[in-house]
Length: 164
Image (cartoon, rainbow, N blue to C red; front, side, top):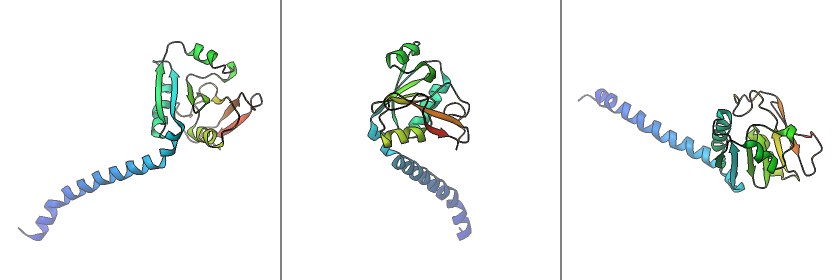
């Protein structure tokens, strides 16, 4: 067999093997870059079993490296009432992580800031369901506020501004 035919015969197999190897490297880099998220323990998310946007937020949180435990309930209202989340902060799902409440479609940069800075707050919220927030289209240019509540937070205090 001529050398060029031998080379051409092995090229697809070599390309395939290199492609598989690169997927592994990319996954390891992703896991290493977010391993600090698991330092905060399990994030408990309570949501409606029929809410697709909540499921999308949970999937994105897992991609960010958070260890998630989900509880589906038809009565999300009682969860918010039991946690004393102010009514004007309510959204569709409620999460708890490392002693904080996280209400609604909070962007993960705001969540990381909360867990890194550890302010004296009860939690943070994205009231309602803003278009472009994580799980609601996930547009990094979408502008909306993340509001702090409880502890040292003033009423309506902006904790983080998304899209800026």
